[in-house]
Length: 407
Image (spheres, rainbow, N blue to C red):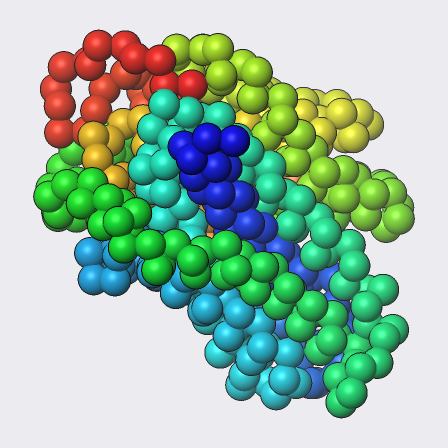
């Protein structure tokens, strides 16, 4: 293997191992939440706040993460994100309520930093394969999420030293950041590689100027509205299915099917994106399918399994392609970091409002038609902004750039 190929392989492994940490520590909480509530005597409102805290942390820390590479360097910033996640996992597993919240904030800050900077690493390491590598790492995020969530309950039956139950289960997530650090820490000692990554950042991109850029807003709203539809829909799906006369067991299976369906696009899109010079048609189709799935669930609820699967596939496909725009619509890693911070901060802020808004209209109308219509309307706006963001135009540039093969 040549030195260049070996470097590319190590860079890809670093990206994928980092991606393993960007969803699992968040989603692994839900399977053991009941045990945590019983053990720490948490109220339902406290537990609800605990589940919303990561999304709020994402929204708060994403814009701060965009400036970290200028202070620490790109690779040290990624190592810092992994250390935050690892520290949060340990604190959350101690079994003290205050540390449970504090650890969750640490995890949220670390994941937010990783979410913002991972598209920058992709742009630095694989500038000609941005969409393909983005698909791969989103798929890997799904693997980490599925693995962490599925083994939480079995692990609660194991005792080790002074740890047992949900504490030991949540502490298992520590395996992933430690494994990723083994890959990223050697990069910190490679001064030449680190200097190259930092030198390619380009001049700083002020957030104020980014807020005045139409392309930046198109990418941001494409990602943000897509995130809103997912969290607003997924957060209430089991209750929704119960009210549509599905049993709790069936509702649980369908909810699991939704999570599974979000893993598939990372593989399905690989051959398409590797051969396509334009994402406009595919993202319009995917974002439009989210709207169709929601309308289908309203009009033909008996086919909920089909509509939920369609929603998961289409929503995650839209997210993968929209996230690749962070690299494709910027001219250097500095711009990519700023756009990633803006889009994910606003995106998760929108996502955090989704479940609350849907719950309010459900209470107001005592049904799911109006809430689903609201999510569908948001999905319609998402189609429009994704279509605009898919045009081959860089930020801070009025004219479309000459089409390039961006994979």
